[in-house]
Length: 494
Ligand SMILES: Cc1cc2nc3c(=O)[nH]c(=O)nc-3n(C[C@H](O)[C@H](O)[C@H](O)COP(=O)(O)OP(=O)(O)OC[C@H]3O[C@@H](n4cnc5c(N)ncnc54)[C@H](O)[C@@H]3O)c2cc1C
Image (cartoon, rainbow, N blue to C red; front, side, top):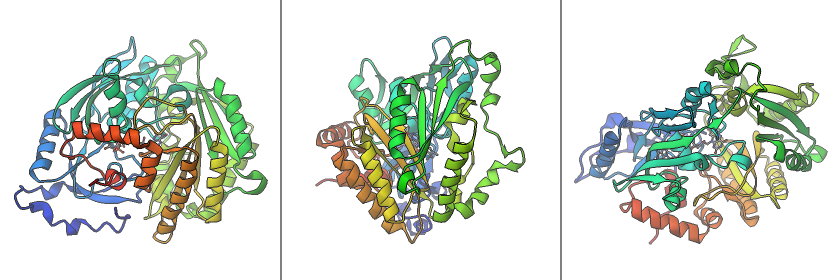
């Protein structure tokens, strides 16, 4: 099992740098790596190629030293998807060039290490914005396609893969493919979302979204309980470009599931009187200080005393109440300020302490979502393991083989991990899994740290898994690509 942070201590145990019959891996490439949440960690020999030739060389090093390989973008997956204990880790962050950009049609071609931050900064002054972005701008495009990430507009725009036109792909076996969405649809929809198990995206072409302002029209709603939240979503969905909810998971009784919802819409052409100004990259920059005084880089230190059950109960309550009493129910907000709320306080995860955090995100069909999320929050409260943050989104079906999407809703629950609660928390997620699976729900590998192979099989189904294994055999016959997540969820078969 992958080690909790603080218990890794494996570096000293690696005695296999000189495997009999293999050459030696350079010890100076050995680095401790963590899942973004910090609750899982391991050490790997990290290589950072900046060209496809160097990428091939890293594969060669792994083969010569008898190691498997884990692909890694910015390491923003919460759990163990980009970790591989004692593997070679190929980190794509130096393959970060924007190769082609055509502002007349919004089509851009990038290397896989280009981040969403680089992307929006590059295109915004020409009147474009990435069509799908996650809650942080620091992910790479390779990682984004590896997981096929979604944004707060998933119900309308689908996942990022729906905006990709083509990509170049170096399979683990070493062959290069150019995969076009129209002409190689089967491979296109199977490789995107395959969590680094078949090979590497080396060049990605996607279409940006035309925008006529650097701002969005944002509306704020409060819902007194869970059932009001679902009703509000039904009502607002047809007229929203983005919709996201925060549930106070501590609230009970009549206020169970009380929540705040933010709706955002693009501005039509001609509505923004000064688009040249709002489309400046500087207009999107998140402020460095709070109230112009306190540097945000140290904010996490002030959050730390609150990062416990009592403190977070207060924070959730205060957030809800301050939103309810605020007269500001409509505002103009820059795209980045709306999209990347989780980047506002740098290093906020440090406030969770040494054990870090895990996120449990489940996706449930619309017919049963309210009941399932009710049961989940109730179970968390009963076990006194209440998530400190609970984020609610609407989704739609898509055509990708390893999809996490449903025609329904997702709830993402952030749990603090400590040495004391770790075992109980993992058991709780098994109980939450069972509730989701019984309702035909799904999970998302970008967030996962706790799923079991059986739950993985159940939500994907045998047919999908058989197709996945067939492609794995075709593109990676030696099984050289692995991660802690794949070892956990796809144990070797007899
Ligand atoms: C604060 C925060 C908010 C988030 N919000 C959202 C959200 O709203 N929606 C959402 O969908 N996700 C969200 N995420 C999750 C994040 O978007 C995904 O985990 C994403 O995959 C991370 O990208 P990365 O570059 O860090 O990739 P990594 O985490 O390093 O890798 C992700 C996967 O891609 C594979 N991979 C990486 N590079 C390549 C490559 N070049 N070729 C092939 N495979 C590759 C890896 O093997 C791994 O399986 C959030 C994460 C954080 C930390």
